[in-house]
Length: 604
Image (tube, rainbow, N blue to C red; front, top):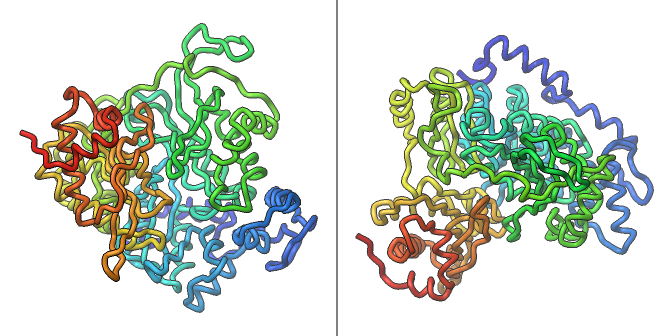
């Protein structure tokens, strides 16, 4: 089945009410467009600020211009017409079968549509699934849209999300109508907005988790969708909730990361007041590994019900003080670099209207250990007799048929949801112990796997040059080729994460991989051919670290051999069998490691 026929009558009625109630009926101009008090396209200058909630952005722009700054072209375009108000323009472009040009390109990203030329003369559509949780009826709708209007596949992203590719200009509006009709509201999925909110993929089923993060991911998601002032930020913004489960949400790579912690008896806050024992969240700020920085602990302790309002207040501070004159410095990290984290917390408190509880990190119990490749294979749930299974997706890609097959499997033998992860794979939960072999066989019949080597289990790749105009290498193809080469040659007995990213935007977060590869191009006669810079020693959480560059300009064809030698060098020279790849590469001086790995190595 496809389209509306994929839903039960009850689901159709629910979705119609949801969409109608939120003012998102297909083809409708958003109701808030009339609140601006100005005609679309009219420029606003000086004190001519619209009365709506987005006025905070115009005032921030005016302050920066008033101190001698010049707004970037993107900020000027947002000032001329707030991007959420360009639905009619999008409809005209679709009717005329043409793609956007100039600043319309960024404006259409506010509806989740990315024009990917010159890599592809098509749209990519990025979606939103809070916490990566996808109900099966929405998964089928995504599969239908991909098949009817896209390339027949869906890519899982490093924000536990789906994106669809190869969408024609004429189909832009019908794609959004179909998604909205299924309850997939992807407003703000791209551009200068809060991106998909991530959470622990094993939330609610993990035996070791401290707290179920699904309610928080949902609450943050709906807060963003329903607050107009949270669009048009200085740059993009990421938020994550980690509940302490076996599979990390990698919250320390986000602009705001909330990490669950437990506080025992006898602890006092910064004013000497006793802190009731229980589970709380620590807030960290400014993570952006593409700029070589992890989020920094803010020194505050929050109850679960404080997280969303505090995040909203922190966002307001970013809106007011983020740089609108230099896109390279417009992320939260640079506000923290300039003003300091203590200042930022005080400003957040001012926006919130109250002070926050202070508690030192060492007064909180350590997070339970992360299972590095716990996102693959079968694992017992906290619910007796039930299991979740992590399914390996080849470089994060699913065909429409595979996506429907997994949705059917989740309905027949699981809990009726797919759980996307930041590792570009997905989990099925609530599988009975007696059904494990049957489910494994069904996954294999779909052409997928739930068991993986220690290389494939941690292989992450961005879209690459096949679909991204910024990428300088075909990362997905090279990642797949690497796995095919390494698996039969290296007896790797410990998990290693290898991240391929096509450009310095670092969507695949190459700096946090055990081995990170950053795409580039090098001269070969009169041609420019694909190559990579190779980094080692990155990590997250308890292994937090920024990878250091080991080799430059390694031709793509030579990357498998270089990685093979690195891994064999590790196996031959590690101090003990328990020493991880990151520990090994951190212990060995870079030049010595380079010398070792440039020589042939053998194990066994």
